[in-house]
Structures are given as structure tokens and as C-alpha cells.
Image (cartoon, rainbow over the protein chains, first blue to last red):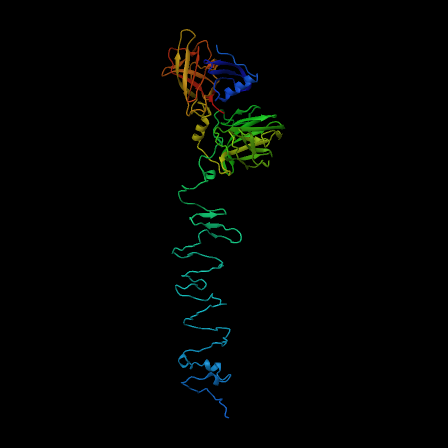
Length: 59
Length: 498
């Protein structure tokens, strides 16, 4: 997952997933499960803790 | 008084002659040697006690019958002595049918046991006796329990037997010994990387199970096939610095299993490089200990790099770093054009870097798919095809969902990524080979349109044993559809890497 090009992130599926839009050279849509066994989720939480990412609440 | 001296040449006596009456020199050897003096003419015994018998130096004693010796024969060269069956010593080249008993050392030039003979023979040593050089090393001990203790190395062309009771052998010969997955770089689900591909300062997975990055410079990676490494054809992974500074280029594989606490492990790979800082590193993530291999000479030829470490009791997960880097994974002086290319990367238990364990493509692919699954990888066609569930609405609230079967259960709940957007929809055709396109298909009828005011880009989902993906406000435009076709040029993948 290209963490450096995350354009947006929001919780979905009743907060069971984080949906990210990735820009850059290879734009993709990414669903990251809210699960500490998932390395992407742990990285996103690290970025949030460092103030490098904000994740929108589910609507 | 007349002399008793007389000529005895014709003297014949049937009575005993008193030797005191025989004068010195009266009986000459010529007479004794006379063939007419036979055994029958001599007395049956001749007492030479206290006498000295001087024999000629050549052929001193020529006897055709037995010599009975009650005492010791000393000072005799017995090499010409022949014995009959049952006697102890043969002449040189003869056969010894008896045994040798000695309380002292017996020195021989070469000892052969039944050499050239068909019968069995035994070499017996006492319990706990040794065979070897007594004053230096006793190479072989045959113990009282039948065990053999060796102090040297056994060199043999083969061993027989089941080996069921062997211990300590797994470290060097056991199967499934390589803990590295994709160590010969067969699998690359994320892309071919057949030409130099820029890497970043963040660790990103390129070839399966390997993530790469540079630090303080820039660099590329490339996967090369049909490379000859150590006389064998394989694939290689190469890292190249495209700028010079104090920095590094490295790849990393993290080993999922944490079973190495207190274990001795060895990492090895064949590496070609022009940098004397090219090396392999075992990082014990729990104990934060790094162990470097020998550094490459930088001579531009393949060299075997290897490192062995007995892990700490809290070693935890092992991380294997490869590249141009410091011994503790830090930066080094690196020049533009410095490269690191490796084949046959292996991590195994034990202190010996053994031959690389080759696994089949199918085995290696399945191992990789636990961590990453691309349903469009090497699928043998232009598109992936999935049965869809859908709801077509007259409004804009239709939806689709479909299941993606996983060939193996993934390590964890996976991250789902895709590149589908409304602009990539094909209304009336299947995606061509390599196309980053998708379409809806109705079985035996043709293609359906795309409806809804939502975006296929919002397709989301994931899974561990299988993937379920879907989205709202998007559906086929027809009242029926059976498939979604996703071109093999799309990104459509599930990631559960460490």
C-alpha cells in the first residue's frame, strides 16, 4: 500500500474497514480491515498517532 | 713308551670311544663330512654340553626334518620360515592360520584382513580399545556397547540403513529447510519488474515476500530470469543505487514464524556486487540483535555470503536484510551504479549453509499467496471472471457484490486494492489482454451496461479465507447479468503481508 499518496481515508462498514483513495502514479481504491493482524491497519494507526493522517468517521 | 697316535682312517670300532683318548685335530671335518659316515654309524646321542659348536656362516644348518626347540629362538630373521597349517607365523606372503598373541606392540607396514580371500575375517579390539595413532589421536574407538566413537571426519560415497535412530542430522540435510519464501524469486504477483523499477525511501513490496527501499540516495530493483548462478540457472533480484552518498539499498523479508529462540540459524545467498558493503543480515526483532554475513569483496563475481547466529532466548521474529548496507543495517558509503544482485537466498536451522532447497512453482506460489493474492496473476487469459449478485433498481440504489475464492487462507484479514473506475467500463466487449478495463456480461446473451450514480471506484471489501467485495449505487443496467469481467491489466488484489 502506497502510504505516501493517501488522498482520503474514512471508516466504512460500521467501522470494520477503512476505505482509502490512493493517488500518485498508480491510483487505486483500498479497503483496510480494522484488525491489528493487518499490517496496513497498524501503519495507518501509526500515521494517525503521528498526525500524518486523519480518518473520517463513517456516515 | 710307544705313542698312542695312529692312523684312524681305516679304524672301525663297535664300542664307545673315550674322547679323552682322541687327540686334538685327530678327527678332521673332512672325515666327518665323508658320506660314508652315516647316522647309523654315529651314536644316537651326542652330548655337547659345555661345548661350543661353530657352524659355517653360509647355509649353516640345513635340516629337512623338524627342529624341536624347548627354549627360545633368539636373534633369528624368520622371513624365510615357512609353517604348516595351524602354526603361528607364515613366511612373507604366506597365510597365517593361527593367531598372534603379544603383550607388546606389533608393528606392521600394512595390515590386510582377508585381503584377496573370500572368507570372512574379524579385526577385534578390546572393549573401549582404540584404532589410531597411540601417541597422537585415536581416530576410532569401538566401545563395549558396540558404538563407534570417531574423533575425525567420516568421508564416504554413500551410507545405507534407514537412519531412523540418527540424531542431529536435520540441520544439514533435512527437507523443507528453507524458511525464506520465494528465495529463488519465481513469484512476482505485483508485477514483472523485468526492467529497472524505481523504488522509494519507504519499504514497498515488489517481488513476492520482499520489500525494498533506499535510504538517502535513490535506487531501482529488477527481477532477472534465466541467470546462471553457481553453475545453476535461476532468477535473481537486483538492487542498484542511482545516486551516491552515505546511504543504502536493501530488501527485507520478515519470517512469520517465531520459533527461533535459542536456535542456531544460518542465512546464505550467492551474491554478485561491485560494492564491498554488500551483505546479508539476520535481525532478531525481539532482541534487536543484528548479525552480518561476510561482506562481498566487491569484485564483480558471484560469491557465497553467509551468516550464522545462535539466537537469543527472546529473538522473536527474524528479519532478513539483503543489500548494500552496514553490518548493523545502517548506511554506508555508496556510489551511483553500485549494485547488489542475489540468487538462492536461504535461511535454515543449523550452522551450515547447505545447498539451496528448490521448491516447485506451484508450491512457492501457494506459500506466497498466504501473504498476497492477485487473482489476475498468470491466469492464462485476458480477464478474471466472477459471478455477481446484483440488484438493479429503477432509481440509483442498485448494488453489486461478488466473491473471490482464495486458493489458500491468507495470513490475516486482507487489504483489498483495485483500480476500477467508471471510466474503465466497457459496455459491449470483454477486456482485451493487458487492459485496465471491466465489463458486465449476461450468460449467452451479451454485455450489460453500467447503471447508478455511484462509482465502481468505491468497490470495497476483503477477507481471509475468501474475498467478498461490493458497492452501492452501482449495478448492471440490464435486469439481468451473471458475470463481471476484470481485465488482467487492472489492479485487483488482496494483501495480508507482515
